[in-house]
Length: 115
Length: 115
Image (cartoon, rainbow over all chains, first blue to last red; front, top):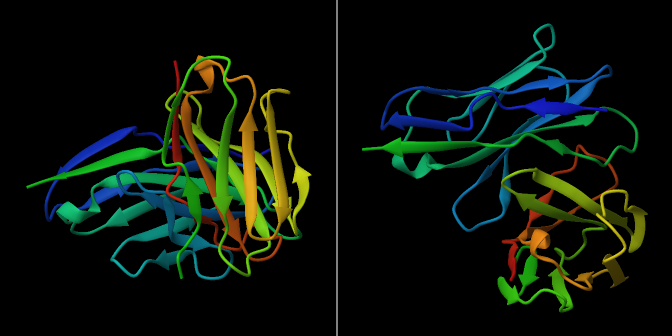
């Protein structure tokens, strides 16, 4: 079975500072990896995902994540954050290939961007 | 597109009462997921439907919980009788296909409080 560890439950940063949200997973098979974002009082939205190919994936709003197989990590980064990035971020993993539907989510990291 | 619709958005009930949560998936999506989110346990998959058929209900906590999907545009999650430990945010999500590569689209959630 897969599992996900998000090492930081809360990350406070100042506006325009860089940020990294850490995610490690455990799995003995190939995986798909995801970052979802949850704004206050809303459902989760997909931010970006790694399925195969290039290990660096990007979102439309400036976030990026790099799949590191040797370190079993999928950390999320942004070089300069905005107030509007304040949200909870969830890393998720699923078994790759075939008809695998199940996502396993981490506990989430609350990113708070202060002015 | 209206997105995934859930009702009610908030529900407050007393222990022992029956609670019914409702979900309308995105039109054309054939996979539907019910999740529960709590501070202690994070986001947990309760049940997964594909083409209106329950495929995996291993996450349903106990017999007090039941879920149905009578047609492609409607699903319910029922708790009878409800208990205070059922207090949580319940999310419905839908996707196309049966593969975890597919993006899951989440509804806004139902915040359930059982007194």
